[in-house]
Image (cartoon, rainbow, N blue to C red; front, side):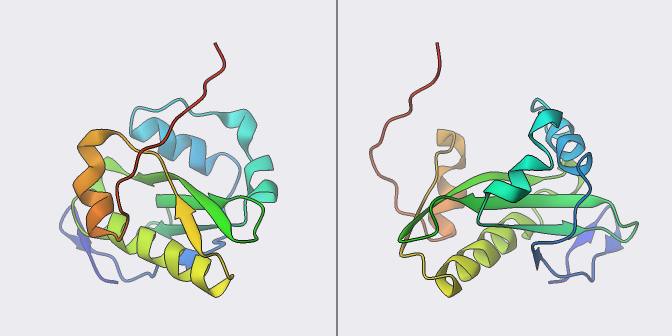
Length: 139
């Protein structure tokens, strides 16, 4: 994949199970306005099936996402994060595509996710079919 970010070319590829330091994903989460959740890392890497990431020309993590679950038939995709300076350049779609290809390779037949309604077109273009569901949150 070759996409530009702030006038510079990216020549790296999305990498499945990219080596990532524990502080890097929280920093990326904060760049998009999310809570860093520093205590989740590195534990998340041990508990998810696989993840994918992309670095810029300065070796900074600019994209991340993962699939978790039992690793049998079904997986759950979560935390598709693209640094704001690199959004709307095709990186998100490439990241989701790479995760779905790895899910297929791993034998997963169903991948689900939840998303804000404003992202429905993005996920539909990425191959997801909108469906009804529910979310439970600790009160």
